[in-house]
Length: 314
Image 1 (cartoon, rainbow, N blue to C red):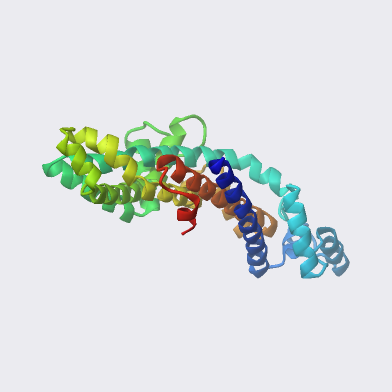
Image 2: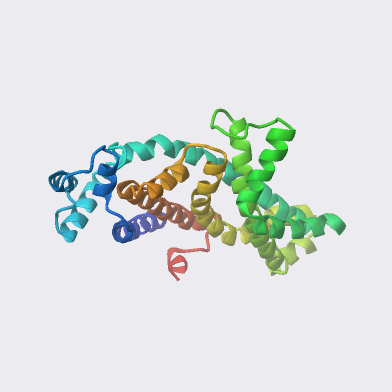
């Protein structure tokens, strides 16, 4: 019952955060330079008349006072209506739905790579000795400091042109997912390995670890059974931000590897001053951040029962 109450409180607390996210996305888009009506009419042939501009402005609701536009935006967003693209006339929800699965697939693959290799490097860095341990401590720094666009171009040159193992562009099949997934995952691998490695080093001196060793538990058993779970709280927090960062960094990967996705859609919307699409993408990413952070809070309680709702709020 206490956990159910905690979940309900967290869900309730997410409502004002979602409202703030939608409000911020509306305000931000109002500050973007450019007139969407003129953008829509600019590709319609002859120079549009004032009457045409006024008619389109009324059709889009842009002739209403700003507060009415804001309230209308919130009401439409609650109903799942984010307006229409000023460039294509397509509903924003449909435009986002068409490319979101590709971005989600890429982000999920990169997240799995990040967790597997990030945790693996951190654990190996605690149990290995000599050059292997030094390598595990140095690799995360290299991964974090390497620019994503340079990694993408290097991977294409090596694994697409010299060794034709993976396609350089496209989104067909698992093979097309490998190179952009590695490009996105490398910085996250470095961060997760660095943070988890530091946490494991701190937990290593805790009394329960010393006691486990005194009882004769081996190094791997102590690390995997006792230290890793207690050191994972900072890493869980990091995973929450990593999901958002992967979606944001997808702009580079999807552009370089010519993949459809939210990143390319955002880039096209910025280029065309397509404010409704930008507004929809920003609102979607904000909602995803809220949902992921909610899941992270719930994971705290599952991983460490000592963590209570009050401690999370603190």
